[in-house]
Image 1 (cartoon, helix red, strand yellow):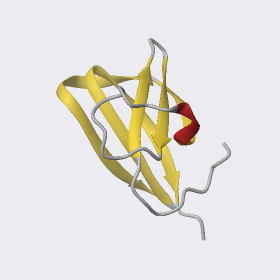
Image 2 (cartoon, rainbow, N blue to C red; image 1 turned 30 degrees about the vertical axis):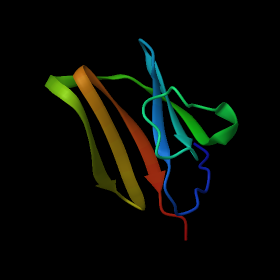
Image 3 (cartoon, helix red, strand yellow; image 1 turned 90 degrees about the vertical axis):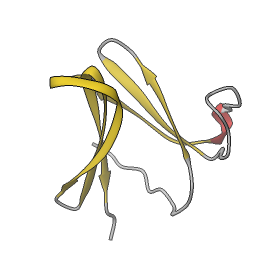
Length: 91
């Protein structure tokens, strides 16, 4: 897997869910509500990740970070599925 270096800063996180995979987008637009002011030219990074089956039902959209060696996985889940977005510390 190739990684893209992301500068420290503030970003908006967008998701494009599909049945078997989600596209995760980091975008430079901030202080916006929803995707109404989304502009693809402000995308910083995109990654497509597979949908996974949750072991229990997730009542509300939830996000958490799970530490892993040299980084973390952002887990985003809702209902009976979730995705994992890898982040790696670059030295």
